[in-house]
Length: 478
Ligand code: BG6
Image (cartoon, rainbow, N blue to C red; front, side):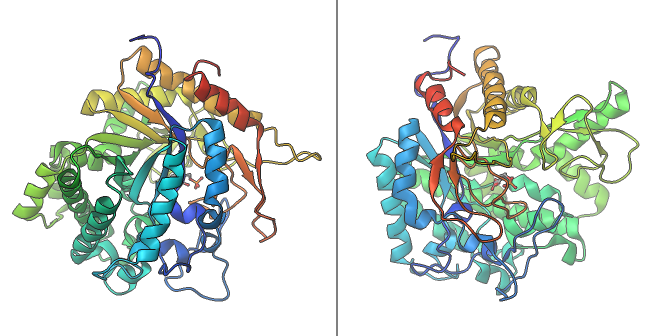
């Protein structure tokens, strides 16, 4: 084995989520999901959570980029780039339209059978997230979302059905996408998309958030256990949004604030990996007088269902400074966060910090000693086609190149055990935070715009051939 290179079986690919690409929101028996009641927003304009569908609003996820109908054409393009894997999610409400049924919707199951078969035809491994911001809306309106313990059973049932059905087609699974977003409990979008709960509406928002996430952690652990019983070869991971928080300076107070702030980033991953809550969680609950209901059965489930690997998204770092009150000006709204004078930001204010990726991989590797999988990274930017239709996204190539270089150092210099790399939005899709088409990540351009215009035609950006060469050379030719 050449220690200076990535392994030959490194999983290069791309990532999307069902609700951001599929569209066909009410086709094939699919029920409305929480993504279907989110309006379109913009940078600085929040998406509105309407709870039910209202005629006066525009809901971009209803149409998305129509992947439901175009997946064959799109997968052929992924295959042309040489993808070894493709990460997507299963829309829970295609399988259980309301979420509380016993019988699954066969048309929904068949859709993913066909999708996975199409990938496997080209030797592309499906990497599947079970819950990526798209629980059935009925579970929110009728049950109160993940506040309600019953939702654990609904999720476990759904997961068991799909894992049993696709056990011979899908080896790599993840339970909850970016479960730790919810730690920023004041942002309605995060709680709603992860759990169907707006924490600010609760009497004690933060305590409610912990209870809600606890239910998900238990559900996740149960699913890991059941998945291994169905097929012991399945690899089942968690998925953590890693936004490392740097100290603003070497002042001891800045350093300590960054350590404390990082607890927020680690907490849920710690439970997924170790099967128990870290001591700092109990101390915080004690300090704040929180009473989180954790039964003996829950604790046993958590211990039994620890994950096989850690999936992560990495877009940026943030910086924290002691003495800055409230949520600072930097993106992601962490307590005490301030702009980092050493890094630039994207048009959406996201810090661009490739070295932060190597740092993040080291942090997780040293903490967990489990294989890591970068299942999201990328550059959301405005692409303007030239008069001849070409799209010269050199800025995206530069971003990805710099991140791949740092990722490679983490493997070859630091010895991080890394399974693969799937850049986000390998085909343009609807942005999660803003609901825009304009914020594009893809190697493949989709002619669709925020005013509703566009043909949905696909075309290759400059980054398409660049990434093809990256994969062909196993990351050598950047
Ligand atoms: C992650 C999500 O937060 O970041 C994706 O898992 C999301 O669903 C991605 O799309 C990029 O965020 P945005 O808002 O630029 O689409």
